[in-house]
Image (cartoon, rainbow, N blue to C red; front, side):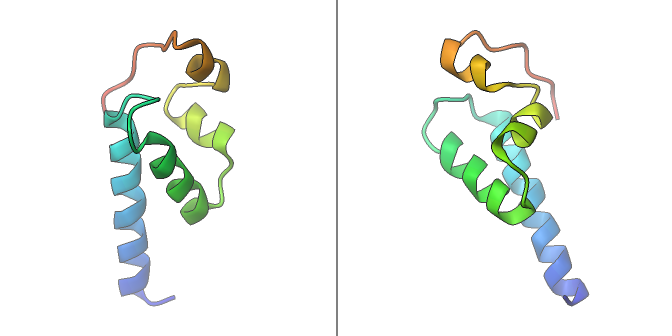
Length: 70
């Protein structure tokens, strides 16, 4: 992987994280962005949600914890 490719991949990864941090779960695009980040990083859904301070029950009960700024 060239440094240019690596840089582009890191920029995309960071943009996807930022999008997830600023989009409420259940909002349009949240699941698609989460799936794109999972594909890019190889991380599973639970690990990405944990990175956002969320768990699967948070999404299903809609009692979301306060979200950290990013």
